Length: 158
Length: 105
Image 1 (tube, rainbow over the protein chains, first blue to last red):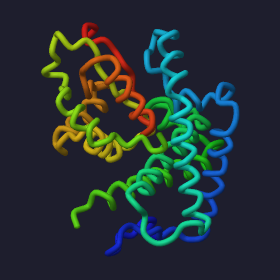
Image 2 (cartoon, rainbow over the protein chains, first blue to last red):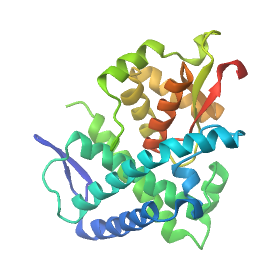
Image 3 (cartoon, chains in turn purple, orange):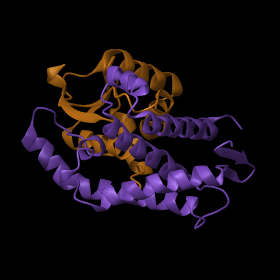
Image 4 (tube, chains in turn purple, red):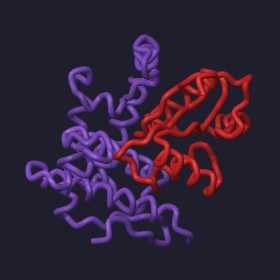
């Protein structure tokens, strides 16, 4: 199925029900991470990176006054996407919904990249051939396809 | 700040202080650096540079390619508070961004 479809009133979801189920499950896992103890999860450094590399104190200070807002934003995005996937929302995406989708797909990819051990081009290439991670790697690539498709749909000349 | 869209005022404010690496002013001590990461797609990074910073598409693409080729690009210069706002916004988009001193360039 074409994941996102531009119609006269805006962008609609074109995901098949099986695709929605997979995505719903991933979003729920992300919601759990965002609701949980971020300090104990290695993915935290992906979603809330150090703002001052090499300066722990400045990074820690930056994190102290930005993380709550960032975390709330990411959780709101996840909630929005979840509502679209589970029938809580329908019709055309608003501009804010589009942002939530783009950002949530990014957070999902950051989370899965962490689980796959993807930190650079080499580890990314390695994970595509690793037997262990084939299923998750497929999901990771599919999320990339979804995001690429959404960016293209949003920016295509009308 | 649920979605961290820059306000109209913030954008206008930002544009005035925008600068790319080629023209960093010595009197502006802080920069926003975006780092290469294997996760974010080129199309998405370009989109973020265009929509958040208001760069025209060619500039956004040039910066994206610089990130890809050199591992990092300076996307803004200005005072520390502004750079921290930009970095927070970039983290909201899921990009790897840091604050640095321009003097270190």
